[in-house]
Amino acid sequence: AGCIGKIRCLGIPPAYLNWIYAWLLDRRSFIEINETRSRWFNIDKGCPQGSVLSPTLFITYNCDLGSSLANCTSHLFADDLAVIVADQLGIKYSYQCLDLEKRIKIFIDHLEYYSYLTDQPINTNKTQALFTARAIDHPKFDIHFNSGSKEKINWVPEYKYLGYLISSKLDWDKFLKLFGCTSPTLRKTLFLSFVLPIFTWVYPIFPFLSVKQQNEKSFEDRCAAYWERYLYVLADSTDGMLLFEKANLNVLRQSWINKDSSIKCLRKSKRFVSNESVIET
Image: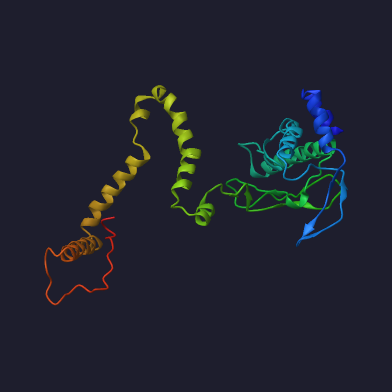
């Protein structure tokens, strides 16, 4: 009744409301394990699994969740909720922790109130908190729900959300190690997600920058200048001489492989495996 009344307030036509009500009413189900089925039993809550209408109805039913939570930024994907709560800037760390504790308390109150109104319990066992800041440790206070349970929300150094590993440093180190930093698809996704929006934002304001700002060297130009100075100094060092000698040996070796020149007492083995020079690549 609560679901039908809520979507009625959203302007759903009565014919669709009657059809959804008949679809949700008097449903039965069974459990099957290793080809063994249980007896049929009635379902009083929830939607039929595997139906296209179930996730659509769930999202429509919780469409006002974001506006019901105060002092935070919420991201809802199906039944997974991620919330970002920011504290004040420009004050001492101890005062920031007190302010953050107050904001989290208000957020928990609003979330539990919404949970009671919609009759949707919160899974406290899967609820975690992540603190990200320049500080090394997390705040020294506990987060509890007001439902009377003694379970608290644990502070974690990282957690997995929608397949992505999010750490307290907000970096991609572990994600790249797990999924491969050489994947073209991954690099393209990271570029489109983080680099391209910056270029898109900078492009329209570039004409408004000063001449000095426009002529300032980019990060790539500064790196190129650094490597030019490094190679110039390397040429006069012992390491540079060894590197130059190694490069010459590679040239002579490649000339021998191509049969352009010969080396006495050296013959090519039948089990020779061709490879590429590290310096040339």
